[in-house]
Image (cartoon, rainbow, N blue to C red; front, side):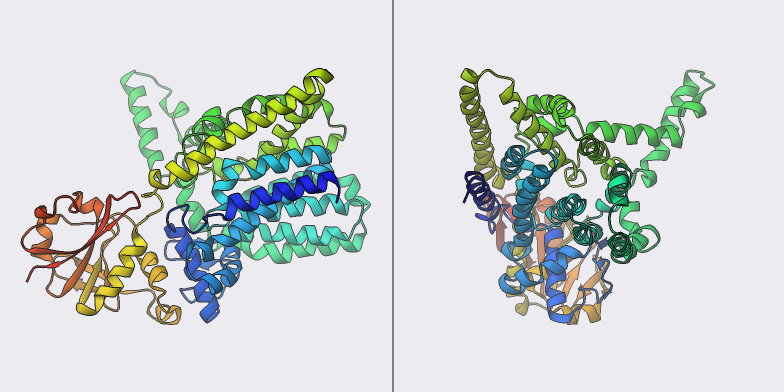
Length: 559
C-alpha cells in the first residue's frame, strides 16, 4: 500500500465515523420527510407499492406531494433490517456520503492532481454541509454521489470509451434521487457536450449512440413527468413564478408610484421586473459570505447556525483557489468545466422561494467549491520558500483541526437541543403512547396544530401498508365541535394548523376519547405546574423533548 493510498484509507475511515457514529440519536429524531421515506420503503418491502398504492417507478406518491423515488427504493434493505428507525432510514444517506468522499478524490485526481484530490477528500470528509446531509435520511448525498460518479466515468470514457455507458446510467439516475437534478443536470450535460465535443467525436459511434439512448430511456419518464405530469405540482408549490405574494408586492410598489405622482409605475413594477429581481437576488445570495461562511441555511435541519456551510478560514483559500485555478490548471477544458459547474450550481435554487440560502437545493455547489478551496490550499504551499513550507503544513493542519473541533463540539453538544423542535422530537414517544393507550378509548384525536401527524402515526406505529392503501384517501367523520376530520380506524386527524385551547378542550372533547395535544396549542408547562390542568380534563401523560421541555400531552375528559 502506497503512502497516498494509506492517507485515502484514513480519510475514508474518518468520513465513516463522522457519518455513522450515533446515527440513531443525532439528529435527535426522524423528521416527517424521513418518516415518509421510511414508510414508503416499508410499504415497498411489504407490498411492492408505495404507501398510497402507486406502482410508478419515476415518483412515489406521498401524502403531501410527489417525491423522487430512488432513495425510498434504496432504503428498502436497511428498513427491512432495522425497521422504520433512524438507522434504517438514514444509513443509505450516510453510505453515499462516504462514497462521495471517495468519488471526489478520483474526480479531482483526473482533473488536477492526486495531491489536490486528497485535500479535496479531507475537506469533504470534515465539511459541515456534507456531514449535515449525510446524517439525514433523504436523497441529497445519493444525488451527489451519482453525479460525481457520472463525471468520473465520463472523463474516463474519453480514453476508454466503454465507461461512457456507466457514466450515462449514473447521470440518468440522478434525477430519480432529488428534484434539483432535473434543473441542473440538463444544463451541465449541455455544457459538457459543448466543451468536450471534439473528444466525444472520437468516441466509438456505437458507445455514443447507446449511451445517449440510455439517458433518454432511463431519465426520460421522470423528466416528462416533471414537466407535464403530477410531479410538476412540487415545483409549482415552491416556484417564485407562482408565489402568491407577487401580486401584492407589485401592487404595493405601484401605489407608492401613484402617491409620488410617477407615470412609470407599470414600467418599473411588473411581473417580469419582480421575478428577475428575485431570481437575481437568490442567485447572488447563494455566493454570499453570510450563507457560505457565517450562518449558513437558517433552517436548523440544514445547518447548525454556529458557522456557515463552510469553515470561516476557507473563505481566504476560496479566493486564492479561484486565482490559482485560473492560473495553474493547464487543461483549459477542465478549467472551463469547473467554472461552468460553479456558475450553474445555484440554478435549481434561484427560481424557488427563499432559494438563495437553501442548502438542500444548492447541494451541487458543495463539491465544486471544495475543489476550488483545495486548489487554493495546495498552490499556496508552493508560493512559500522551503523554510516556511513546513510551518505552513503545521499551521494549516492546526487551523483545520481547531475549526473542525469547534464544529464537532457544537454539533454533538449544542445542536441536539437547539434543533429538537425542528426535528419534531417527541413524536415517536407520543405516537407510541397513543397506540398503547388507544385500547381504552372509542376515539383517538391526534392534533395537527403544529405539524402534520399522519405520516408520523403511520411510520412510528408501522401501520400495515396494505391496509392503508385500501383506505387511502382517508374518509372523514363529523366529530362535534371538531367538524369533519380525517379518520383511520379509531384515529382522527383534525385540520393542519388548527388547534384548541386548554381551558375549552374539556367542554368539546367527546367521552371515551383520547386527545394528543401539542405544546403549541397548550403553551403551558404542565409538568412543573400540574395544578393548572382544568378540572374537566384528566392529564394522562406528558411527553418531553430531549431537553426536558414538554412537547405533547395526552388528555381525556374527566369522569
